[in-house]
View: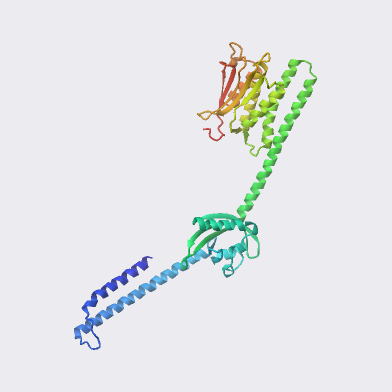
Length: 407
């Protein structure tokens, strides 16, 4: 471009000089004109200078042409031997240009590609995907990409990525596609192997949760069988509490067995399962004692879910046993959600008779309270608080570092 501008400038200057010189030379018939020796010498001098200027211009043009040819050869090599295939495709989808890399990938010579529809090398299943890609490129006039299955000249399939850009033709007012095609077969095969391996691991992990749940169910059945042989009601009650605790853990594995994400537990579904199971195991009359569970779309880790499940089991069992004596009506609530500081808060409350006077849960030696304290403070690394102003309300707050949104 710089050489073109320089040549144009020189031509313009030469033209100006000629225009300036023209008035000095009277428009006369040179054949009949009488010229002095000085005029003849001046004319010859001008002609010689003009001839030299033309020769210098010709030399400059030859050098420019040689530079352009060298640049064209250089960029032609870069185009032909680029690591990806380059095509120029007409608006009708015909191949107009192709580099040598394209000919090599499609196992043919370059001339055999020219004039062919690109769809000739696209699998039947992906024809629609290519037509959509082609349409989007022309419509949006921007870079578009897609991945399809293609075939070489011998119909051997391979995976390809197409990246296309719409451009205006140089000679005709038609839109063409500049398309780069990359063979991504190795990447696709690796992806398929990884997906197959991941699927296998998911199936194995699913089977692990299923077996853990089944083993816990076997433990529950064995404890129930043993309890049938015990006449002491207090001892049976202790066994039943153990069954409820085991069941709260088994419910996690049951939920994960059905889930697609084995690292997180849907806490709302889990709490509902525990609460409903406790109502059934304690033969609760739902016309007298109701259950209310706060609805939140929250997932937590397996370890945190098990700890929360055991806490809910202990606190709800306590409410069902002591909060509503003499057929008293009431409600048990379980809430779980985020606080403004990013902590998670679990609340288990009832509107029953409340705790005994001067009850201090921190100094309590009952097994249930000790379990709740250990789980809240040591397993969850959180805090445990009791509000006895109206009924009984336990508040457990903790952070879960692995959960998104927790700092």
